[in-house]
Image (cartoon, rainbow, N blue to C red; front, side, top):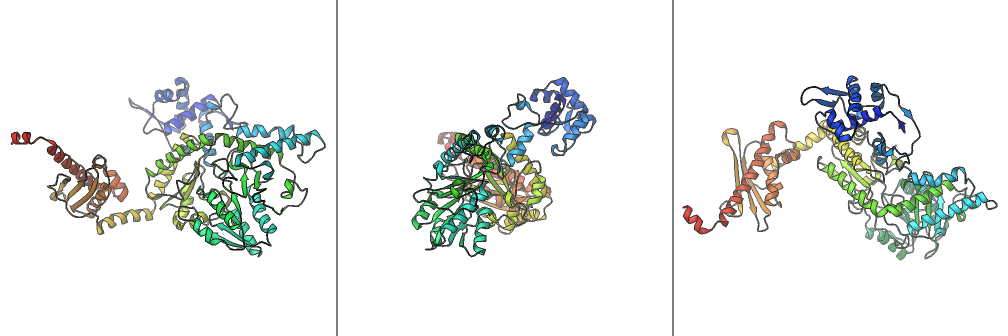
Length: 637
């Protein structure tokens, strides 16, 4: 982390505050909102203005605004402007014991970077590190050394961690095998099973959306002639079709390898049902649980899982440590070890145990299970906020995979008419990815999205957002701003987007919806006529409302240009199914956004809004007259 002076801290807070506001901000406003010392703040602002980082505007309504985008302002520029130096110091975030941590001027910036990386990996929780440290320094024994106290202490720590891991997934401690990570666990499980049971059969069933660690193992076994593999294509929502799974079994099927939750799109598979089908056919069920363990309910007994892979760095634990659950009974699973040596881990994984890593994995899982209920609710709220914030400001936004059966901290979105690499460059202030971190060196579109039937263009423009334990509402708001800004900027330069939007106008012009008239004498019909021939456009729009107050029909007739006809056509589509009150709130900007009307044609959308309001007012007037007593009508005549 960085150690800076109080003046630097004030400057950074001020820059961040100014960057979130439109127009100028006075020093008094900044001081009041950020609780900073006014006099101290003024000195920092003056220095920033002198160096051109912010601009000072004079006058009654004067104040400060940024001279350039916040992302373009470096720490060096700020320190140079203030004549300060920056010192790099040790600091562990986010659960830091430092008494100044809550007021740390770069805490939010650091946590923002951390929070966005959390699908490929996660920062280690300070509580996990505290648990590990003694086994790196004081209690440094080898767990296999049983003739002295250091070894006994290490062995005891491993036993405790084994219990913690087992408890987290509903297993027994004797069923946990420690490995160096998920990739090794996957290799041991698949290769070990096929080696051990080769006389029974050689057929594997897996899914096209599995992690590369699974797919590459299957490909190798195929090349070596040790297995035949069926790769199931999932449904468009990313979930496998259970009927297709049933049909894929043969009398040679030994293993089914289906992941619990996908690492790219976060989709959760019907694991319990898959386990039941495997039992029915006498095959073992291996599950890559890396993305699920500690984040959603995982119980190997309830869900009939025979083998389960786990990894420490996905759950705020250390890197380089993982585990493999191997069922001991009903049915008992035997695995041929891949590594020969000391015979550790019941011969399934020889090698000196990584005691600090194992301790960290156990503690990390213990914390995850303890906080899983509250974290699920919090992350779902943040994910919904992120999706709503983006989709409310951008069109042509597509969520990849099921939104209902999904990890709470995952959101995978494709933005049409933008290129993925350019999009990530435009969002360089947040750490997102366009696919699996394990395959990010490849220029090929995501194999997961391709399996879902997503086209190359949308697959290339997909962005994976990861929300985790240390993600805040401010982080989400920042991610929304950055994403929307980057997409809009790229689309402004995209001829494809311009052409696509023009196509919508042409579509409504050549194939207008709801042309015609309704009976304007009916009390349930409202008619709005706006415009004038001498102005070039006349629009007649009618709505028919049912007894529940819902618009069930809308018709139009328009004299005017193509944009006027398209606006009328779209307006009638937007009206159907809305209540009268909802219809009255429709704005021309919605029509402009949907049709991408150029500035010279915005008046056509205004005409459509006016026609809608006129039709609603006509209906309301009819209803008011209908409610008026007949005697009043006679007297008024």
